[in-house]
Image (cartoon, rainbow, N blue to C red; front, side, top):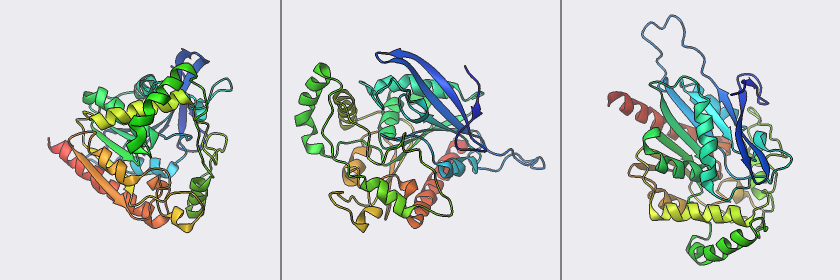
Length: 332
């Protein structure tokens, strides 16, 4: 394995390149970024009082995205956890010039990315694992956790893409998409993205805690969707609809409402303009037997990039949930 080097996010962040072999397009890599908690003060003779000491967090981003949220990392490290963020193959730091951005034909391909990132954590004896996924990353991690139930201690899902936006017609169009994926895997799927979600994030951005985004890795309008990738997503949605078997407790954070982005309006700065959140809330109940759904008024699709009031509420609810989980885990 290679060496940790300074990351583009600056002080306190390091990255490690993870070689993953080859696929049909050539060599494949993932990248893991880490942020570590400050050591406990030497005079704390009773041990580290932070609630998440002994916890590792692995974050996976969504579609057309990568990890850049320093504020999210600080939430976990301030509570004593080690934070790791994975830029999946063909995204962000892991994207190479010969690759089709984001392209895979099966979401299980990401098992290698996840396992490589988990292996890069170093010493893990006695440490608990929390998975944290946004949007497509939430779907990917939910499927992985269902297949690896004994490796996960808790899961946090930030607006996970657990169902297609046109859920009732998914079953009807899935066979056609599947045929297209087999015959013409890189056919471009129709989509309309006017850049309103990016605009909404920019409108509510916090000037006191700015975030720099690489538009080559996170374009204002979404990356091109290909038939084989969409088929893989549909397969994931079908698995969720049939019911997953996650044994760990799950916390799902969602906006309180959806806004359809057919034209620009201020409503888009206080709602999820990507997913139908009521459908996601229902689908979330099928991933496991212990699921908490938190609906946040005024939140965007990424609840942690919302306007300050909604963002603070999201962090407050997450803090309450993880503290309760950590206390329960210690008492067991």
